[in-house]
Image 1 (spheres, one colour):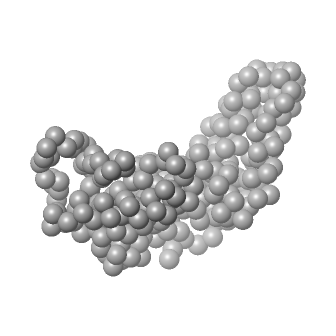
Image 2: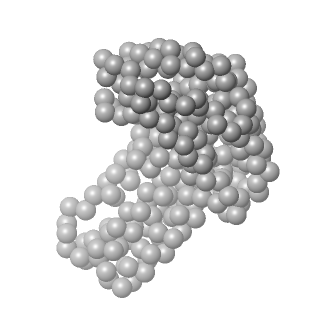
Length: 267
């Protein structure tokens, strides 16, 4: 089954499962398969927004596992060969997330007020494949200031970069080649993430850096960074030289991201 057929099968299974739940306001599929990055072993996420507050999932029947967390309830449902992890959250809580997001200052303090979960959930909503409540999902997407989300994510990544770059610079000065290797790679990676966010991509998952750069048309950055990631010579002096080159490239990426990030936020 190819990715398209798999998504259609999961859509059908999700509609059947949710049909008996009148509190469902909207549901959508998300994850790497939906976004075009996944492979046959990648999961498909099912996210549900339910009317009302509190417990929005009925008690499990027939041994169906249901796990309750602070921010969501997760049901595990099997549909043929597909395992569906259905995450349900109250719709009012989502509206509160958006309200808090728009009240935050667009600076480092504000960026760290947004949890990793919130960044991920907002992106899932942005790119998700609607299954139930298409009009509501369109309304919710329109309510989010995606420019603000991207800028807060950029600021968060730039702060991460600063810590890694400082560690790498210290390791280079100390001629600690192994630490310089690892920390300079982290600095370069977070610098890439910083630029990706500045260019408007809100997927916070680090593992898709190169795919996101390709989506954004920045093959030049992807090729350069991929070459910089590789260290064919294990000699400590060679490792230190390559770490320095990574830091120079990372600084350039962060500077470009900063120029882009200073554009007006809104809309």
